[in-house]
Image 1: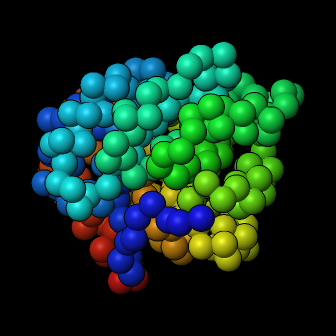
Image 2: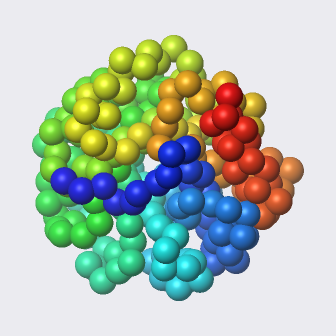
Image 3: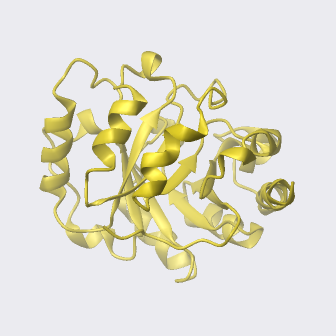
Amino acid sequence: MSRPLRLGARPGLLVSVRSSAEAIEAVLGGASVVDVKEPSRGPLGCAELSVWKAVREAVPPEVPVSVALGELREWVDRSPPPAQAFAGIAFRKLGLSGMLGNDWERDWSQVRESFGPGPPWIAVAYLDADRAGAPDRRAIRDVAVSMPECAGILLDTWDKSRPAPIEPIDLAWFEPIRRTGRLIALAGGLDSTAIERLRSLCPDLFGVRGAACAEGDRGGFVERGRVRQLVEAIEVASKG
């Protein structure tokens, strides 16, 4: 198992974009990782493959690009993207909403196998699992740390109208992830204030979409100034 990227001493900022133009704004604002997704298709909405390619071509090679693939249930009976679509992609992620009560471990394993070799996977644990109909985050964590092809875990929200309820999570919860050398990312309605509040959890990445967009609207356009403010918030929090 190898990690998909190497970050510095402080957390990095992952910015989700829906176009190459947004990707350029994210990079100019100082994003550490550019993540491709289509927000109109859900919390992890899968963008068109042409967008993946356009973003990767627009972003400097040294800046990692990740892709959201939507939800596991969308791929159980569907052919995966061609292997070449993942050229230059640092990692890929897939949600587990609607899988509670199903044999999600089996389906997750089969879908990953059907995708074949490629970028490492980031396991996604929804903090509002009850709303998402997703497995408990502890169960997802325990499976993820046993997967050689899994390079990290993202704690996110399925319901984007509400901020991520991350505070109740104790630092000890992250220990199995850190012990196995995997990446930890926090997302879900985060802004500068939330970054300051959550700094003690010491993630590798803070992930944003809405806070980086015009007027804080996740359906708006990513602006470099907003991205820069978030990067500065991480720098300030890291010194605290």
